[in-house]
Every structure is written in C-alpha cells, then in structure tokens.
Image (cartoon, rainbow, N blue to C red; front, side):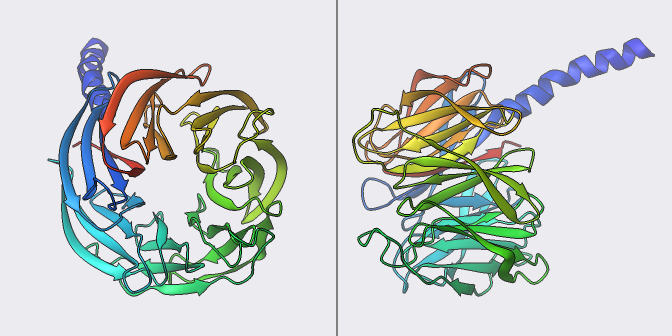
Length: 370
C-alpha cells in the first residue's frame, strides 16, 4: 500500500511542478506611445520562455492588481480628475483573455497605484496629482462602487516636487487591518486603520512614519514574515527598513540604493522582497538604470550585494516570479521588459538575453495558468 501511494505521489509531482512553472504575466503601460493598453503573456518560469496571449485597450493603465481569485483585473487610468479612474476587466485564466466590464472614478487626479485587499471586497487607489487616496467597494460581479476619498494636506522642502501632497501607493497590511499610504509630497508614510467590513480608513493611533526631508516616499512592501517592512524613497534614493507590529512602523535602518560614489540624479522607483525573504531589490531610473540588490539578515537588516544594469532606460516596476527563479524589469522608455535569472543563493542577477517588446511598460503582475 505504501508503494502504491509513493507511486501516486511521484506521478503527481510533474503536474504540481507544471502548475507552478506556467504563469501569466500581465503588463500595464502608458498609452502615449506605442502601447494600446494591457498585455498578457504566458511564461514558463523554469526556462524563461514566453509567448504573447492577448491584449485589451485601456487609457494609461499604469498600475494593476488582481482579485484574490485572479478572476478580475483592476487597472488605474492615469489621467486627470475628469478622466482619472479605475477600469475592471474579467480575466479568463483558461485562455488568458481580458474583457472590459466596468470603470469607476478614482476620486482624484492621475491615479498611479491600485491594490485589492485580502478579502477581495475593496480596492484602494492612490491619486498622485490629486494628493488623495480612495477606497472603492468591489461588488459580487467584480464591478466597483463609488469611491470614498481621503485628501492629504501639507508640503515639504523640495518646492518643485513637494509643493503639495502626492500620494504614490496604497498598501494593505498582511492582516488587512491597516492601510499604508506613502506620500512623496509630504515626506510621510501615512497609516490608516482599515475596516474590512465597511471599507473605512481612519488615522491609526500612530498616524504616520516620517521620512527624511526631501526624500519623497514612493513604494512600500512587507517582508514575507509580516514583521518587517521596507520603503523606497524616490528622490532620496534610499531604502528605509522598519520593524512592524500592529500598525506601527519603527525605523531601524536607512541604506542607499546607489553606490557611494554615485553623483547623478537619484530617481528610484520600485521595491520587492524575494519570495524566500532573503533578498531585497530596488529599481533606480535614469541616469543609473540599475537594480540594487541587498541581502536581508535574520534581524531584517540590509547589506548591499551589488547593482545590475536593467539593459534599458527608466526602469519602473519590476517583479520576481512566484518560484523566485526570474526577475523581470519594465524599462519604460526603451519599450521592453528584460528577463533576468536570479541566483537564489547569492541574490545576483544574470541577463537571459530574452526580451518582451511592449510600448512603455510600467507594471508587471503574475497570475497562475489554469
């Protein structure tokens, strides 16, 4: 009997492996150039082979997120207030097709980030120029209700970039009880208590974590252990490391995402932790055009491992596939996505030579192939 079960398990292993290796890659873009909207590719994350599957028209879908069941895609339309909105697409995982089903106001100018909460019942969207964020209810059919908008106020030391609030991202805590809202314009990560029943966001007992003046908080991510969080600052070109507990951030390290001898403009963009929690990566745009690589020790402290050229201009978002094998970088101004193989022991990146040619790619998301 034991031998029979052993053989059954052996037969099942390739099926599990195939499911893990085959992923859809969803790409959000700016449509002011060669792009028409959203693109879907199918990828084998073991070999790096990738094939075009489908596309859907949308205006400036510069950031995306998927519902927990991956049946719906929510994409910002990064336009002004009379057009600033969130579009909804039904996603058929059997064939990778997208079907537009709804659009709702984002509640502010130039929405640049969207996130779905853990229950799949709420969307939070960041309005960059509007200096606000909104929460929108998700209906049973995937469509969106009207936004409930929270307006930020204030400014900071850089009078050109920080003349008013500029909300850059909206990140739910691992337990879904808090919403973290980095604001480039006021040099703060605003912290809100989030009610997953009503969708209401109210200032948390400790309502913000301040960054260094002029640094400009941008993107924010949690470590897989849920006890650590990391922030990339756009103009400071630095990663801030925090201990996290019950809605409170405690800063314990700040480290540059640039080499010590770098003298050019600092213009950082995105940040992600590897699935195993051992490495952190951050993207730096022109003129550096690099991915900064850091190791993470048991305490959460970062140590610089190296810097990898993105092989293109203005790297925006990047992504690590669920297996941790590959890291893909969206180079906005060279209209391509570069595929790197990731050494899971050292964290270092090696160019595979594979490219995805897409107009003005900005955001990359994964979904499992059925």
